[in-house]
Amino acid sequence: MFLPIKNLLDGLDVTTIPLSRKRELHQLSDYINYSLQHHNKTQLTFICTHNSRRSHLCQIWGQIAARYYQIGDIHCYSGGTEATAVYSKIIKTLKRQGLEITKRKPKENPKYYIEYSEVMPPLKAFSKIFDDEANPSQQFGAIMTCDHASENCPIVPGAEKRISITYLDPKISDGTPEQKAVYEERSLQIATEMKYVFSQVTPNKLQSD
Image (tube, rainbow, N blue to C red; front, side, top):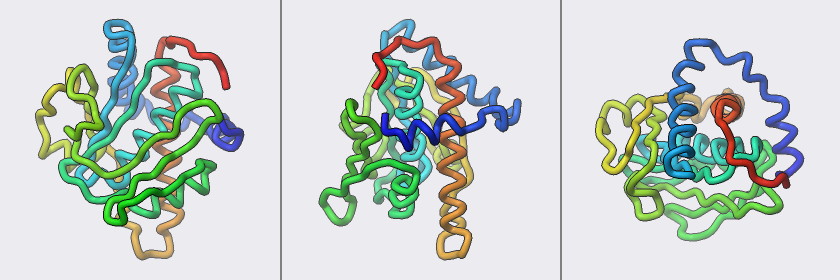
């Protein structure tokens, strides 16, 4: 794992997460443990309306947190109820936090290749609906990361577990002087909570970077 990413995760304090929030997060760690036990792998699809901000942060930090704890056979995905594009400020925020990101065409909905480790393949980020062919169609957990998607997508076909873990939309800060700080805060909040989730998982151990 890239040293800046490891250092960032080392410094995230999971004790700041309120107990009530930890109870919500335990739904996810419990499902991961169940899936590893019964399927020998875990597939997680994080879902938000536009698949442009929060769901990507969850996908990326979830995958990184699994690697941080050397937990194998974890596969994180994301999707929306509609496809748009990954918002540019998400990419800029992740770059500032130590990820190496390459942009590929097309212009309207570019694909980003996100590297966090010297040995792991890059993560692919682009906006898509949750049942896109790039995502699993069965034996996966669906994690709703925004209230709108949670309310408007009560059933996710193929999902064996549906979990609601929602986040405030950093979009509310767009065009304001606080935008950079809000995106940084939301990214770090999600990173901290994914770190906590995977700290509660009984791992299938990988070799260290």
